[in-house]
Image (cartoon, rainbow, N blue to C red; front, side):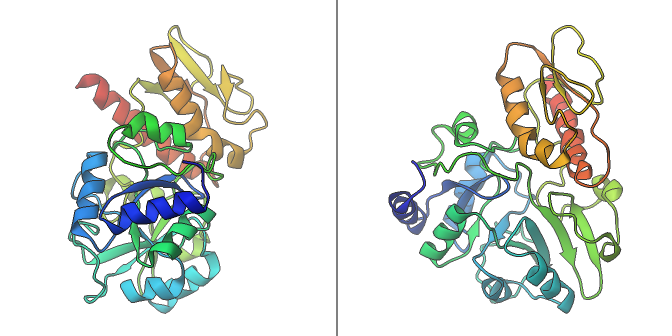
Amino acid sequence: MPFGDQAITTALDVVAHGGIVAVPTETVYGLAGDATSDTAVAAIYAAKGRPSFNPLIVHVPDLASAQIIGDFSDTAVTLAKTHWPGPLTIVVPLRPDAGIAKLTTAGLGTVALRVPAHRAMQALLRACGRPLAAPSANASGTLSPTRAGHVLRSLDGRIPLIIDDGATPGGIESTIVAADEELVRLLRPGPLLVTLDLIRGAARSLDDAAIEAPGQLAAHYAPSKPLRLNAIAAQPGETLIGFGPVPGDVSLSASGDSVEAAARLFDLLHAADAGPAPRIAIAPVPDDGLGLAINDRLRRAAVGAVRDAAA
């Protein structure tokens, strides 16, 4: 259903009765349900086929709403005031009286919170008047959706409503940090490049970390086909996704623009996954700036694709 007043009214009715809906954010499409409802959160896990130890991000309309749910240190407040609304998720201790369903946090004593900037998610949050758990709107471990059509392909028949507001502008999931009293740890790189001097703990250590936030599984964001990284040329049977000087069959960004590449990443992976070639290859992306987040997704996607092929 196209975004508008009628779509929000329809979505509100679904959510108010414990149901779930797909809605765009500035990063990817999310699968939203009432974060205080065991029934709604269970429906999210069931629709995604999501492991129960993988927590969900809770979306709220503003910082004041987030502080009702989580215990924000001065550092966390500074991060929130600087970067919200926007593609930053902050993991903080869960308040005991927050009322968040235990399934939402996977039983952890922390909660992942975000204030999204997208008009559709903001409209739904304000209409509902309650926090919404909203992981990416795709089957667990598969490619994240940046268009309503991607959601339909992955979850058709599992959810009653998709709010269509076109392609998401960011194209890659939010940056996730854990904010303690004086320490900020990077749990998942993303489109927001949090000031590096605030961060203790780098992306290279994420694969060895305990699950504290979404997107930390070693195999994640995977296409159904084998994915070869750092390809300079296509091999027989491959769709080559280029970048910069490597043209490919299609390109993340012919000019080598990492912002354009992030926005197009999952869209092109979806297209290659649905195409006739049995394998996918992707050109090297420099591992700096936003490239850190792009390569994080690609490494996890390649692991997931290998595991799927071996299954």
